Image (tube, rainbow, N blue to C red; front, side, top):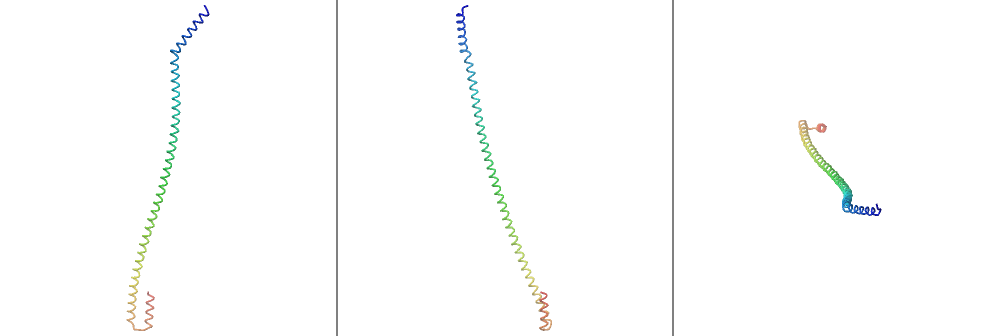
Length: 156
């Protein structure tokens, strides 16, 4: 065999093989590689979007938590303020009630003093009348009158 003919045959076969590969085999391989490349790129982009969404969600959660803490502290402050108001109102009500009770007691005491004075006046008047009766029953004598008045004074 001739080496040149073999070389030419092998070259033609090689070129046919390369043409066949470029026409039928190479395009599906390139398409598969492009599809895989696109899939990997999409996966990386989705991963990046997911990371960004996670950061955004974390920031939102932190913001919401901070907001909730502020609202809770405001509610607590309002509750403390309201409790102070309630305590102050209760103190004012208690003071008013105490003043009313004291005024009623003082009025009652004043009435009792007036009644006691009236009773004392009545009793003094009765004693004076009784003393006058005793004086008038006995004879009129200065010494007897003085003794009688001293006895009346001791009774008062």
